[in-house]
Length: 285
Image (cartoon, rainbow, N blue to C red; front, top):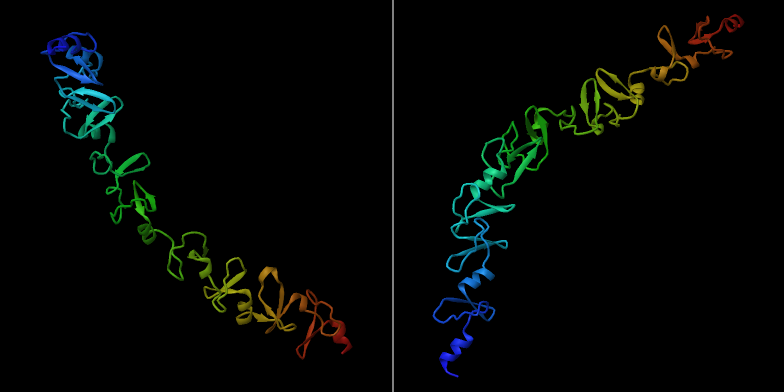
């Protein structure tokens, strides 16, 4: 078979069968196509103008979508995105600036737009750059650390504790939770101790002397009068009643006749040689 016969019978478009001899053509999957058939069968429509992207122009593709190079523009400002950073949002593409201004919002402190990748701090419906979300007192970034709302801003944990938190009157550290208050003064539970024996007083009965707290036992041993009968302290705690006469005192249950042991509470008595006697026992003596 001659060369001319092979060209006339085999070198044809794989679709329309027209001869490709002397014409531009495109190879695809071992077949040859004239430009018209190739564009009809295989060329992608442009996302912007919806026309076929021919073989004589650049086909720019992204996420299975295609554009003419002259159509690959920002959907908002129409700036060319060829060789530029861009972002896809829905079915549209945007330059970095338009994407930032349209979708990323502004920092409520510096009023500048957020950049892609910026860490955004959100609180009470407002947004800040991480560097702009600062303590209103020390002006240091709060970041993800603990903070306390104050008026129209926030205060970091350190500043709040230094300026506003209650501090234990004994150790001077912050009473973060729990604790007790005695005479308008805060204490940690483990710091509120008996002045004498240093026992913790939280949850126990106590009393005070010269503004100092004492457990009942120490107060009785150190300061309370002693019952003339049983010699135990008369503290008056828990509604305890007592009787005093001259320089002596008795628990009411101890205030009995030394002779017949009859209770003398509310009755007449005599005191002879440090012994108290009812009238009957006095007469018998």
